[in-house]
Amino acid sequence: MGEKVVADRFDLADRRRYREKLRACLRALRLLLDGRRFDRPRNLMGLEIELNLADAGGQPMMTNTRVLEQIASRDFQTELGQFNLEVNIVPHALSGRVLDQLAEELRTGLAYADRQAREVNARIVMTGILPTLTADDLTSANLTVADRYTLLNDQIMASRGEEVRLDIEGAEHLVCTSESIAPEAACTSVQLHLQVTPGRFADVWNAAQAVSAVQIAMGANSPFLFGHELWRESRVPLFLQATDTRPPELSAQGVRPRTWFGERWIDSAYDLFEENLRYFPALLPICEDEDPLDTLAAGGTPALGELALHNGTVYRWNRPVYGVMDGVPHLRVENRVLPAGPTVGDVLANTAFYYGLVRALADEPRPVWSRMPFTDAARNFDAACRYGIDAELWWPRTGRGQGRARVPAVRLVREELLPLAAAGLDAWGVEPSDRDRCLSVIEERCRRHVNGASWQVAAYHRARESGLDRGKALAAVTRGYVERADEGAPVHTWTPGP
Image 1 (cartoon, rainbow, N blue to C red):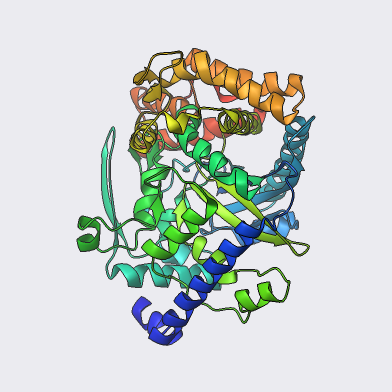
Image 2: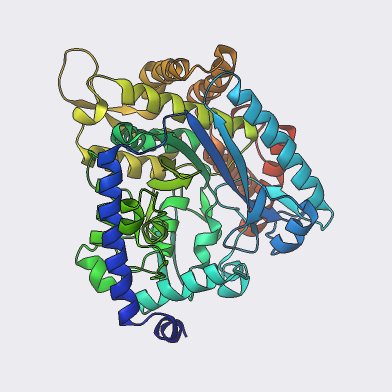
């Protein structure tokens, strides 16, 4: 079926034309970057959170359209699965009382949305993967009914030529197959945006890559999938495998997956867009009418629609974004590393830690990426996803000594990175009381060795030891999670689970 859709909608001529348009977009982007025609820096940050819907027993509910009708707000929209929603917060200047303002907006918006969801017997759950999801919940029948989701599913499945195979080995081993990309819908995340100038982009992106592992170690919240305890952040291998367009033979040959950490530090935003064209064939070769070079020659600002569309089908954990606002182009770094939840306070702590740390590292005269090979950043990311707050990470030694050391993530954060994050928030001009309140949450997670993933795992094992079977234990964990999240206190303060 997928192959027929591809043949009907996109023939070889479509793909050739699209590739030529992508090359034209890249040339236009190079000219824009060289001409410095971008928006002036305004320290703007943005925030998106993907959400789950569950019933009173903690089981997923496929009712996002009904819930959205109840909410009736443009801040909320559909996501891939019928048990998903997404909330978008308008951009804010990263200064002053921004963290307090964001906390108030999120608490108010999510509380309102949850009240409306209860009208149709649903609850909003903010977590990386809903623990009670089963393989039967993640089928093509439960994808949100929208052309873009159907088309994306058809294209990925046609590119693979076979079913999606999930094979994740952690505390337990999960192997299963899917006829569609629906397992991707299990992954619910937080996306953090930061507008930057072209000259600043590489430093910010490199810093974001360097700290991705630390973000996961502190914020992991996805330890279960399909009834199996896997990695502390199982969302990452799940997303990689669910979106993989490579048949096994291409994977074995080293062809890059579309969900990609990357393989090098960069010098320009152009490097990433050029890699997209070089490494990844088009999934949705839809051409716009605009000729970007003609628009540029006429003094206008091209939308670069093909470049943006293609970029949206390459799932980097730190993604470059090109946009146009009021006729002026701008660049953003989109950080897609963090899982959702557990609470608004936890989300804001993760947010503050990220923005502070990226600012401080990007400002350093001898930045961390000049002292650490990219392979260390990649293996750190893998270790953090596997072991969460118990991970050990490779990091450059401080002081005059050369080389790198492998250190527990909690020690690295408490002794070196939290002070850097505080300095970075100061550089942004964030209110000190907001800075301290958010970063203290990260410090307490380190001190107590508790984050969302570790709480869920401990609660699950308590439930199993009490005599509950696997399914009932995961349902009890989910109900306990929702009850504690409703109280609003950050996860490191939560009482033990069921």
